[in-house]
Image (tube, rainbow, N blue to C red; front, side, top):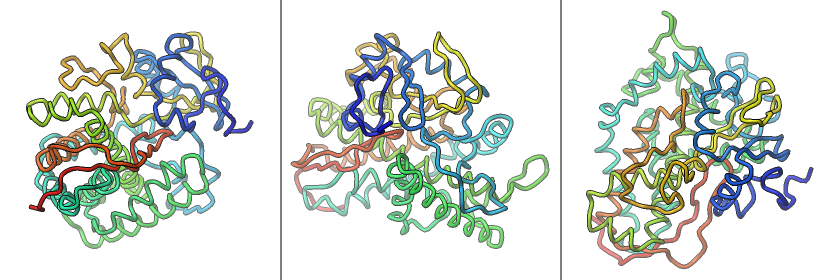
Length: 408
């Protein structure tokens, strides 16, 4: 079929790359919930799209019937750049790309490195980073909230955590976009950047084995499972996950929050006047603009709630759509920055719930508080806002204007 043909019926022919869907998928989810809570499509190799909160939670628990071995909706072409030490590297990003039992022990190994106490140690670095970024443009009265700020924070923090030179941040951004944005619908490009990321981390892992440092890569190199050190393939795969999943998702969340406050002056003024609202406001940003839709592969034909899902198809864990379900959230399509009851699943559900959620929340908190402290009054500037979509949604161009001020 023509993957780019206009959608005629979203219930049987949805397209997550449709420009209007990327711009605002909410009307589609609202319509599907009422007449077809689990949609299907033959586009992009075939997939299913649930839209109700409780369905998505139930499907997330269907392990191993719905496998996480390839969480992207469009499978990449056969992996041609084989390396005997890295079999099946094309989809290697544990634990997000793993099923039990591998998923269980890798997640358990990583969790201590992302505990609230450990993550809090990154606060001073993150605060300094956000101030340094704002210093670059605060005297101009204009900035691209995505390119100049949101996009810059997660790559540098992930580099700091892994012990990598943050001056390579532009390369990291290119690589991540090559895998999750441009490469999502162009798998050949995705494989190109996967090779680049693999080879980069092969060098980093080899270096840490010879020159241990105080960073996460060294900790992984020195870790053991069942009395044996982790293989290079496992360590490189985990680093791949940290870079790709840890960057695009969080910069999308930060950018979406800035877009909201730049385009909703009542909420901006209210938050600027009452910083005590930050905790609930951040959770509401995560709910309303949840960036990530993960994929699961149907290993064998499975029927759920009257819908038979074919072997080999993907099921999209539509966490953003779940967060707009009126059966769970009062006035779900409104952003309420003091929303008291907010059981959102922006970080996923089930065994694959994001293990980096504490880090993401720290980045959201520090980036927004620092921005509001330095630039409390701002609005959208002239020029279009450009959104990326597919499986990670967020602004990629976000023109903002404000009164110019002196750097710190």
